[in-house]
Length: 329
Ligand code: COA
Ligand code: MG
Image (tube, rainbow, N blue to C red; front, side):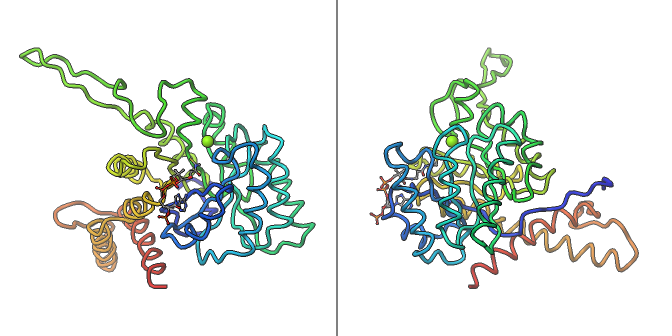
């Protein structure tokens, strides 16, 4: 290990599915509260039309005080720092929203100072109203500038808990040729060299691999949780599954759901498969046995396992323990 250890700053909890609900559709709040999502995001930003911003803010402030959200993590996405709604969003949530809110999500973060500015507002308002519960911050990486400054952003505040990747805004910011939200592009391909008959295969590439990998790496390097963003075509469960599986494998702990029918898919994909859990448990018990015999490495079904295998297995076993605990409540 480095002499500078990475300390996980985010309390361990489930993030498998984060259901978005526009603040301008309060009739959906109770349904979202009753859903199986681990996290809710009441939205003030892009799902709310400019004319509805004030009303949406009022709706969310009332909901935070009136609706029973159970044990869900409750977050609100505020408007960006380049708008005139942003400061009022923060102040209304802290000054009038009571104690239920868990975290504020900041969109389109470009540099560490963006996070610093929101932290300053949250801190001042929290002290002024005597708020007891600490508010966390979540950041969306969805601009070329934000991705470029991701390491400094990830260290910008002690309130930070998670980084999220927003594919649609990111694509717009970078001038990428895509108009769907988080899906593939039929033309982003590699052609194999011709085979003996001159045939060439087309292999689709993942447009989102680099930014998602980079976000996972920056989040983990600074003790934060990486979360995959939206997949716009909510009628394409198979496409959602494939995208979610790739990011689960890269290290994301969950994915946004922009429609209730994506919640179960996200919960399923971000729950470690039974086969992986069984193998992780077997690794831990085989390594315990090896250590009792004074050995640092052992074999399990003919495959080498060692201290690194313990760390890999622990990630899966701890995640599964949280899921079992939640489903037993
Ligand atoms: N949260 C809770 N319930 C929701 C919901 C949500 N986000 N979206 C839809 N529902 C409910 C509907 O009320 C409906 O309930 P019913 O069966 O009791 O009538 C059911 O789920 C099916 O809804 P459907 O008719 O398929 O959806 P819709 O046309 O009403 O809305 C969207 C579709 C995409 C506009 C809506 O899901 C939505 O606004 N999603 C969030 C978008 C967002 O916040 N984007 C920003 C982040 S990218
Ligand atoms: Mg966005």
